[in-house]
Amino acid sequence: MKKILNYILSALFLIWELPQNIIGAILFCIYSTFSDVIVVDEGTSVSVYTSIKGGLSLGAFNFLQKGYYRNPSKYVEKTILHTKGHRKQSRILGPLYLLVIGLPSVIWEALRTCFKYFRKKDYYSFYTEKWADKLAGVER
Image: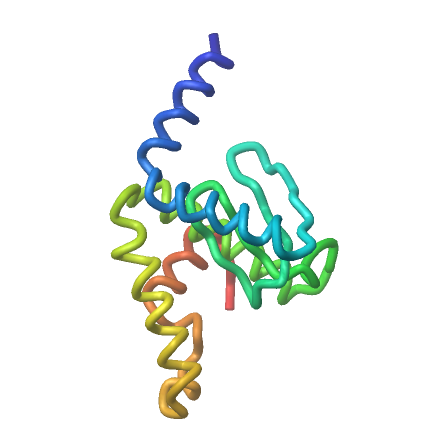
């Protein structure tokens, strides 16, 4: 009975997070086709280690820098946990995740990349990142 309930819950989350799951699946197909990837099944999510810089969470897909795979450093450990915090945000917000977390995070990173003023600011001081850290139990 418990196994059936887990399948039902997984199906409901798949639907609840559908927009980010679709984008995640598309990115997974692109990375799998055009670059070398390491895929780690983590039960309710899949970690994909590939040529991406840093990390990105889209529904059930966590994309991480290939160098992070089996790297025991504290920074990498915090980054992986942080990405799992974004996964929790996705489960909480469902279809609103891309608007509330995804788009602001992309804009924040673009501002930091393009403008010296924003580069001085701590990446993890932005609300989307602070919340992900809090959900994952990451101390900075």
